[in-house]
Length: 136
Image (cartoon, rainbow, N blue to C red; front, top):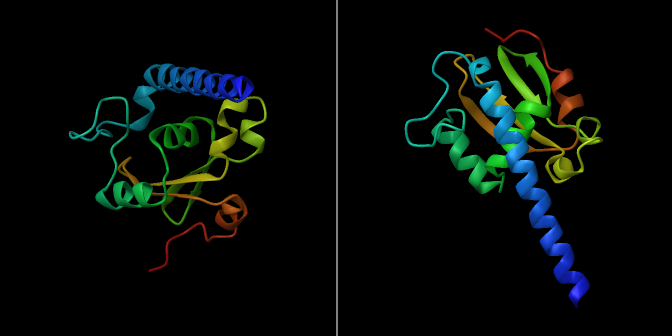
């Protein structure tokens, strides 16, 4: 029974460390999001999200940490006039704290706002198959 309690505490410690790493990196690279990428209703540590993105991330149980992890450690792809950030298994090999977030995909609009978020391990290959241009 004690072994199980230790693993939970270790997991909590790893998650806290991962949050600190993401937050510290986010503060260093804050200017890369553009001129006005933050919501008034949320704290300054998080990019602006549309109402749709807020609703979908809540429905899909995608945490703020998973979104930040995808934005900073994920692969950036430009497709259909939007920017996709997808956190692949390859991206988290050296960071075991982020393994549980593998497959998280963030769709960001041109204005820097997060349009939607979803989790799909195969999203990278699906996004690569999309057209590079928007349809008229």
